[in-house]
Amino acid sequence: MRRAMGAATQASRAEFLDTVMSRLKKRYREQMVTSLNHKSPFQLLVATILSAQAQDATVNRYTPRLFRDYPTIGDFADARPSEIFPYIRNIGLFRSKGRNIVKMARMLRERFHSRVPKSIDELTKLPGVGRKTANVVLSNAHGIHEGIAIDTHCITVSNRLGLVRSRDPVKIEARLMRMLPSSEWQDVSHLFIALGRDVCTARAKHCERCVLRDICPSSTVRIGVEMRI
Ligand code: SF4
Image (cartoon, rainbow, N blue to C red; front, side, top):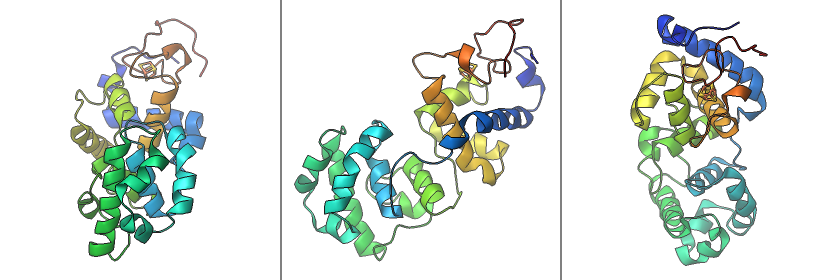
């Protein structure tokens, strides 16, 4: 089955996105969960803060020792940031991340009864927590789908698929939320990240290996080339 490049714009975007989601679920089903290791909402919050501009695998390498020595919110709140630095030194931006994690733990203790809040409004009040981090924690730790976590992969993929023409994560999130039911909000984030990591990277697109190569408006695979999906 081969559709012309403009077919996505002729059909409704929601219908197109439905096809995209169904193919990505078949291809990346095992990646529809966060790859950040954690055992509690607080640990996921810390790991997500550490993952900014860093690989999840790198974060996973260093968090076990950190969480072993600082098992509770109170342990982080009582720590000086300089005590945390050695644990996360190899992750990148470790000074600002370490300071934010300690400040965040103190705020959780003082204002949220040492619990991770369950709304974007409250989560984004915490130091170092933006809308993307809040969405990751809400959906993966609390099972609450208030929005969609948009990272750089989601930005690249959404634009190449012609779903948006914007690099603004807030606008992309709002657009995807309008096109998908809330039950799909967590999945679309994981699936676009999986596609972005695998074949649709910011630096290069490997359309010949992509399960969307016959319907994507940015595909470099030529019309008439045999599809094997
Ligand atoms: S066909 Fe190419 S541009 Fe389109 S999503 Fe796949 S890898 Fe990205």
